[in-house]
Length: 176
Ligand SMILES: Cc1cc2nc3c(=O)[nH]c(=O)nc-3n(C[C@H](O)[C@H](O)[C@H](O)COP(=O)(O)O)c2cc1C
Image (cartoon, rainbow, N blue to C red; front, side, top):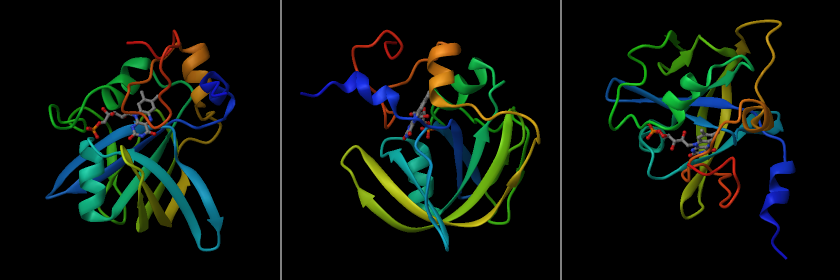
């Protein structure tokens, strides 16, 4: 039995991961950032090999996570989650600051940030699991709720592209 619909009962948070290469910034939506250890503080994220963000992280070995606010508009999520930095400059119209590692931290529609240095990666076929140590983190907007993946899907009626780590075929919500 492989009832993939049941996987929607796993809980995730919505984030933008960003990276920089040759002075260019890029980022994309992920819902697969999770904490792995408390000391040293480590996180993992699963990133599609075809994305530009993957290229940038693989080259620079550093990335940031900007955790999305529940109030983030769908258009904002679409800009980072359905467009590629191969075609558009995603940071051209977005408020951000550069973190300690020089990687952008998104300042609009976000509640917190993490900066991380890649320590290890695992080839998963379509995706790479990057394991990284947190070098800095903090809150951006106290009192604003983070957005969960189920809120994005069930309340915002948001869609998920095939490139996403948790894409599941055949459901109403995930069909383009
Ligand atoms: C709700 C949602 C969740 C996503 N989760 C992931 C993920 O965990 N990993 C991933 O590689 N892509 C994920 N994506 C897809 C990327 O954001 C998308 O492929 C993006 O266009 C890549 O942009 P880039 O080429 O500029 O890096 C997700 C997209 C959405 C809308």
